[in-house]
Length: 131
Image 1 (cartoon, rainbow, N blue to C red):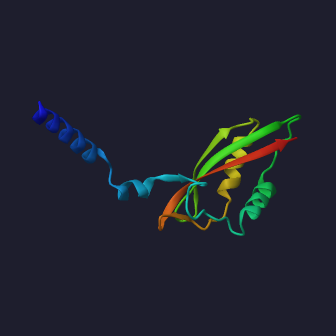
Image 2: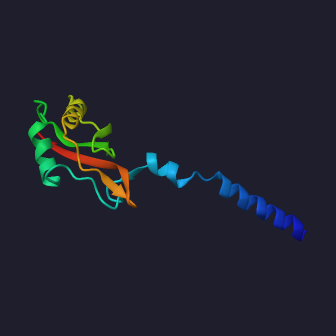
Image 3: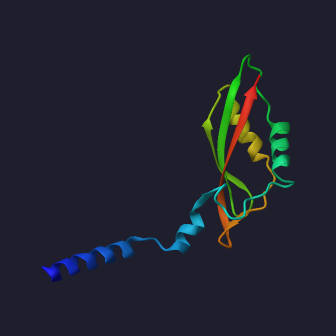
């Protein structure tokens, strides 16, 4: 009985250790939330300049009583470019297409890094619209 228990435990430990992906593979493609990355990506001029950039370029649709929060996520790549833009909360009337257009105009960011290596960073941007 004791030998059977030791065999089962050994097989269980071996299965767990062999099933894990090497960290080097995971780190190259993993996306880290903005709040969790050690050194966050920086828009040229800082966060205030990013807010100004979006405000200057985003055209609010001329729809009466359009109100709400447009929420978008995107990845800041290791080269500072923006990719994987996803609208989480669309207000309709072309707001999703407009924020995608604005983000496509963005200059490259200074990339973030985590544990001394360049990191892909997930950024969430809420935009309050009151028309």
